[in-house]
Length: 184
Image 1 (cartoon, helix red, strand yellow):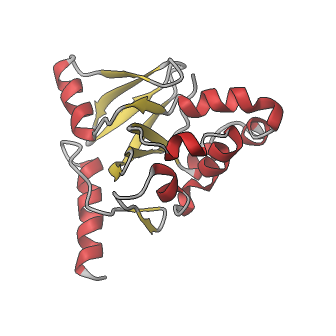
Image 2: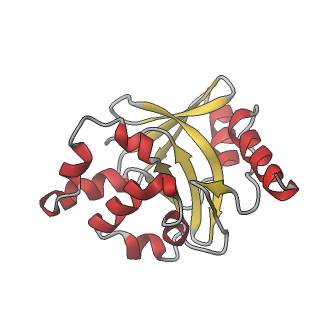
């Protein structure tokens, strides 16, 4: 394993497992692909083998142009495994053209306007008695809390997941990889 790759892995591990959500390495690996800070959210996401379901959903919802725009956006990006945890048939149903509005709501529930870094989340948690809440583009809220060595994300229905890779910087915002689909 070369030193650059090893440094990226260590920095990413520290970002999600240390006592703080530190900045991830430059061009961190997500889904087997380097994520480049000079590319947009969409340009990077299409290269992650762990986000093919999310990319298909973004395309079906007609959000490619929006998420390729100037932003900035903070995207909490569920992995394929996160989508697989949904009840059987949910993803297929959401991807149908007649369910575009519902799919758009689910996807925009994972987007917060502006650039919210892991450090911002950690500082807000510290300053707000252990919780940080952000309003999503869909109009709902996502709540964050410290949990063990990492941080949890909880949706309005009480579903909870973890940030698995933080601070994947993009030219138009930031992505935080999560292990659960959040539902409005």
